[in-house]
Length: 239
Image 1 (tube, rainbow, N blue to C red):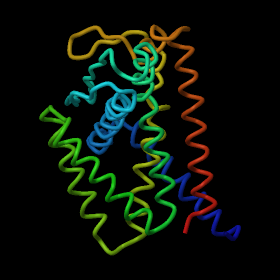
Image 2 (cartoon, rainbow, N blue to C red; image 1 turned 90 degrees about the horizontal axis):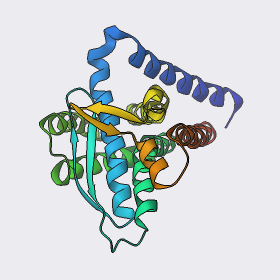
Image 3 (spheres, rainbow, N blue to C red; image 1 turned 45 degrees about the vertical axis):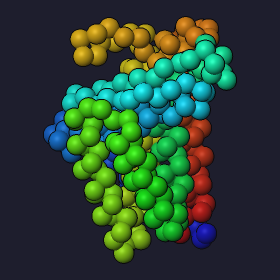
Image 4 (cartoon, rainbow, N blue to C red; image 1 turned 90 degrees about the vertical axis):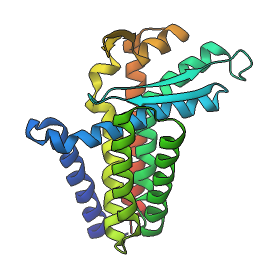
């Protein structure tokens, strides 16, 4: 890739990253930010759910609430192939790293027209499948349905650059979401729907060792590595 083209791709990355930050921090853009906030919640809760399947637990359902919060319900059986304390820690970490991992994959896929098109369609399939099998809240179902329809339209439009930029925007929004909610990483307990609950980092600490803030730092480091590698791949391989 020529220097000028790489600079152009770098400018695209920086511009979209700035747009994501503006979207999150300017109050007047709340109505635009709302669906992306719920989409971030979906990535987070699906991270919990899919990790539970990997460690041998059962992914029961997930709920996304109108205020942007959500919860994934999982059941851990004694015959799971991963020891319960390790499994619970991995499931908790799966939600925290889910947006970064998913976002990194989307950024990488957005680097080429063909991979972007198929990446968009794969995301669409996963989203629809989650609606059918796992999402059990009205807000979650309707918002994800609307997003699915919009992604479906974009993926089938014969405009490769639009597909690439859309997937790149979703990927960057997802990778940066970890840093846009730092308060949650460094919280031991929080209130959701009137109930006091333990944070994911606190669950990791209780399942393994250490403190919630220590695991918050670990999550940030891992997320930063994923972000750096995906951005680097995009800059080198973008077409």
